[in-house]
Image (cartoon, rainbow, N blue to C red; front, side):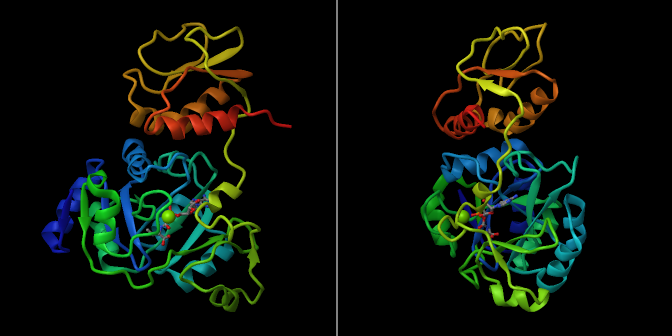
Length: 319
Ligand code: TXA
Ligand code: MG
């Protein structure tokens, strides 16, 4: 890990690192973010690995301006009003995700919505501009720890799991962004944060709907949304030979069946690659029309824990 002062040369170096799939921690006005190229699935998988998250939580995409946000998510009239009032600034908007934007499915953990924010911090803006990328960035702390508000916190918490830390001094708010669901004409508060609810209500003229449970589980509002689950059933602990009518989700060195839809998450058994492919593979196998997806075992180590968490949930009986 390298700690860099925010000089133009260092910002250019950090941007190059991001473009080659590395992790760069940078300050925003709220807390430090652990950034990666949101269009590079393996780079995004590295974020989950670095944070030591045992499950995939959707991540916030950081962009430079509202116009770029419009290309990734659908800004409803209410979303436009929120963007006009608070962007750039410490507000995250959950929007309907547009198809084919290049944003990795791992960023949204398979959801049809995407969380976007336009940060108001010169260094965050500089790294977004220099990289030319939408940046997926959760708070730069290990899972379960408090958010990092100084470069020192990031270094202590993440160590060599992060490639570069841009040191821009302590963050201003020291509190995460407020998250609003604006996919609809009503605004819902998913996470209280640096923009007070009253400031949002002053714009809408209406009381803000609180999503029940968001205070008791403030680190995981994404968990409250109905998570992506394939329509097909999942059969776990399968071998490489699916039964008639099944599709195969393979892992590791195996010959794929010629007579069934099949996708290998990683033929080399690489968990980073498997995580990057997971959600798109499930969607494609689901679209094949198979009634059941047979899933080969995935080791319960590193990112395998988060992959298995998602597969087990998708395999759980539904009503
Ligand atoms: O201030 C912040 O928001 C900081 C800085 C770095 O931007 N970021 C941050 O990210 O707090 P993180 O990953 O620690 O928290 C993001 C939250 C998660 O709880 C996640 O569940 C939620 O945003 N989220 C992301 N996408 C979502 C979606 N599509 N629907 C609902 N919630 C979502
Ligand atoms: Mg966090």
